[in-house]
Length: 396
Image 1 (tube, helix red, strand yellow):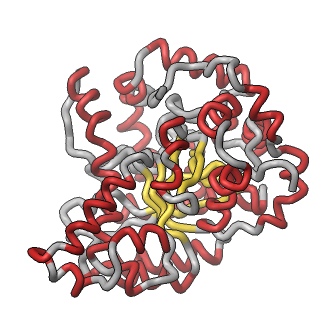
Image 2 (cartoon, helix red, strand yellow; image 1 turned 90 degrees about the horizontal axis):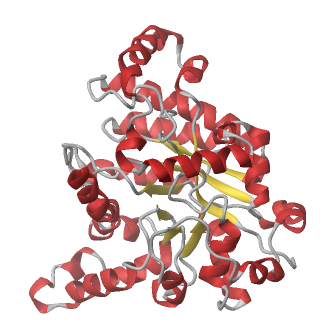
């Protein structure tokens, strides 16, 4: 293929909250109606607390110019918006930024049964959304971990529904951490069903309260909590026991990887923690290289320069569509900025081949769309020096 197979390893989708009702089992619909009434007063406020008014207004304007917010959930508009970015396929995580979270997710007082019913409703819907686009949409099922048997059942359902992986919570909320043996049936089911185990950054942090200092503290520390599970899985021997299991950590940046795994390797090699070598026979960095992927959403030039230390076969680009902090609708500029000096073979890995391997996508099935939609070297070079659109993190 002369053009690049661009697969965004980080996109989001979700229905406007009331539209989930048909996807809920009938016995939960009255509860859902009460949930919508209870949560109505706070809808639309979450993003206002997190981002400035200027950023939200710019994002809303760009979304309308690109075709409207319907692209967050509607097939045709979504396809048009992503194709304009040169994106051929996408990995879809759940959303919540447009009041489109899975049913009951906004209510911490809802029972675990209702939360499970809500995630099943989202999973059914996203399976339908992905089926409408074949290999071009890579859907992930939300799987809660409190009830391990139910989690395993949902993993088997996800495989049958054509989804490519599962997303588990960042934190276990009062349960043992992910190195505990209670979760072993979940890891086994993912490996047996050939589904990718995924975590997405942004949740799992403590309650910081409210106010500007709280928001900034959350933004400063949220990445730490997102990265903890991979450490727990490594020391728990999960990757040693399940060598075919694939793990993906998305939207938690990527420049931390080299130093973090150098430190873990030092622990593993040290004489004062020699029991680490009894837990796992390989250095932690070897499990990272062998089985893990990192979605470098809104990839920075610094991450591009660090690609070999991060892992040229482990790093994936992501647009974070349609979030305020993502690259849409300036993805071409961002790609030029981050990858202009990267050799072609390595560009192909970062832009799509690694994601295809992580999520079991058949590149042959995308070949025609790549030649029609995918970016060329000229497309990327042409954008260089035009400016980067909105202000972003990681300018260096």
